[in-house]
Amino acid sequence: MKNTGTQIALADGNRTGIQTSPELAQELIDGAIAAIPSSEGGPEGLAEYRGEYIAEGFPVGSLPSLPFAQEAEANDEAIGMAVLRDKLSERLAFERMGTRLYETLINKVEIMGESSPGPTLTELQQIRDEEMEHFLLLNRSITELGGDPTVQSPCADVTGVASLGILQVLTDPRTSVTQCLQAMLTAELTDNDGWQLLINLADTLGYPELVKDFQTALEHEEEHLVNVRGWLTELVLAKVELL
Amino acid sequence: MGLDIFKNKGVPLAKQKFSWRDLVQTPTSKLDDDAFTRVRVILMNGLESEALRFSHACARMNRDLQLPLARVRRIEQHQQTMVNWLLPADLSPLETTLAFEQVAIEVTASVAQREPDDYLAQVYRFGLLEDFDHLYRFSALYDRIAGGDANNIIQSYSDIMPGRPTSVEHRDPTDDLREHYDRNTAEPLTKLHAVTIMAAENQTHDYYMTIGPMFADPVARQLYAEIASIEEQHTTQYESIIDANETWIEKWLMHEAMEVYNYMGCSQYETNPRIKAIWDRFLDYELGQLHFVMELFEEVENRDPAEILPASLPEPIEYRSHREFVRETLSNEVDLRASGTAFVNKEEEPERSLDYREQMNSEGSPSETVAAGYRWMPGTELTAEEFAKGKGA
Image (tube, rainbow over all chains, first blue to last red; front, side, top):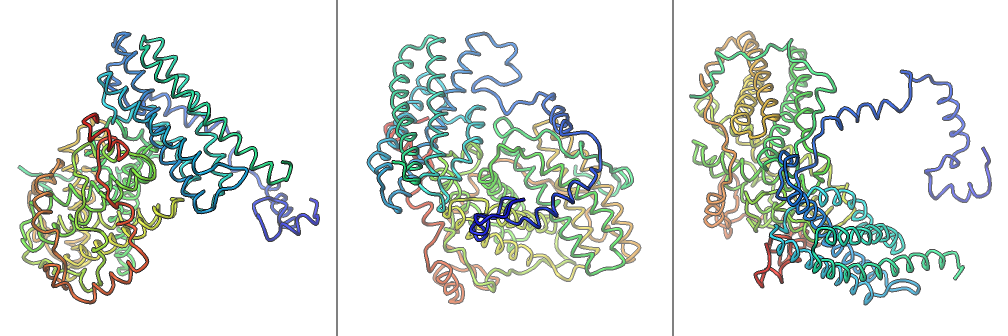
């Protein structure tokens, strides 16, 4: 293990890496090599455990307006509508959370001040307002299709779980604007693909009006992605003074 | 006719067995299971947690009982695991919180209406309006930080509106203690109710204390700090209505009877057959444990358990919406406060509680801040404009 001047400088900083304490690290490594696992085999056992539960076949929940038990017997039209509502609900949940996420980011920039490079409050507010518009669009679309926009569909639920980490990053007062943008990049990438998928689905199922409305939303999201990616890149590069 | 707990001996302790695989069943569905299935899971987890808590306290004070306590406690530990692990991982900590408050509201409402002792019924109504307010505050938090609709969890069974404001629930400890039932004269249902609700509040407190620091948002952290403090107050309140003169084994016997009573109720109301099978299994286990403790009671105290246990258990907690009762209580009693063990109008609240409250709220009120101007509506607050135009759900 090297013991460099960098380590000495880092000694009072981030302590998570093994090079923080070379002597202790060597003791740790030597001990772990000498120890014998209490059972043989490898990590494949984890997959076997999980496999038993996966094989039980329980879903997260039923599609909107189509109980799981009835899925096998449902006709194509019913399945199509259920899948469409599932994905609409997912997108709605995402846009609704996205609105709140951008409100949180605006809060952060308000306190920390705008920077150049970096987003302005006006730009963030515009993105927030567009996310809100998208949410209301989806609300109306589900209603006009005869659905209940307050349903939390399986995809909406799962997307909520996946987004919890993004929420934690944005609401943490210790995270920087750059770190928040990194998290929002994940959200915008997901959002872009999500809208594209919705457009394909609406098109396949024969809802041209929805396709048209969703195309507009996708155009907004493409701009959001370009912006967020751009701010993030500029902020990171500015930190190393390459800009 | 209620369950005859003297005739039904359930399963003997030696046959109450588990494996790790057995303990970890596929959980309930957040989306498809009825909210009251979740209410029952949370309640029974709380009751099992109380079984362990009581058992440890008893063990610390009764050397001769340590082994029988440990034997039963080991089983209760695994029962608690199986029950609690029925909550699914997609139910986030904040969503679980909403469900916890729904438990407090609907179970306490049922208890308050059935409670034979008028004073204790008032105690339950008093606590009910405070937990009712907590649901409103946590719903606002869920909406405003996560864009979530609390009704996805509540399923329209409970109202989401202000109760007795959390910000005025902070009291001096003197004003949290209540009068207790008399162990010699109280009806069995009174005793069953008291341990049930105390257990539920204690578990709620412990849960909020555990998850509070898991939130990155300081607003959430403060709200959990505030409401966890109230749940500690509630635990203190409900603990105080139980006669401290009951012997340790008497209390142990009541605990087991309470678990039998509640598993019976869960089984009766459960709509998910897979979960009902668990309630039935554990009802039999608890009957076995009850009979084990009955024998100890006879041996150690030379008393007949029939002196304190009813031959047949009363009707169980009603797992249904108690909206009307809650609204009526809210309308009549929201301005009640506590003065020592009595309930008084807010103008008569003692200075000591006012001073304490002023101190705790001196740098702001998380519960007021989180829910400032908040009205729950379908699809969250963000639909307010659409809702006003009649375009909401």
